Image 1: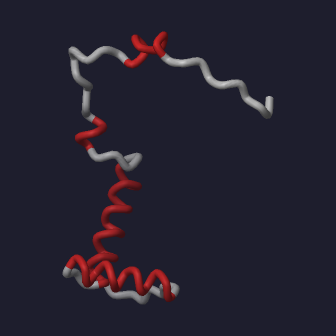
Image 2: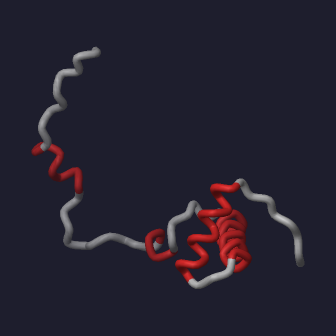
Length: 80
């Protein structure tokens, strides 16, 4: 499917520069960007890759809250 896409000059220059840097065509970059965006929207994906969403943590690593007592109190707020 073919269609026209109009970009402002700055966006067009950035697209050209990035395409040259990556050895891609403008159309190829736009196609990849649209596919990625549609994939995120269709899957309800908040943008995090699956490896991040599936990560369960490190079992023997202490919980962050276990160190809360070591934190310094916040400084006085001069605007309060």
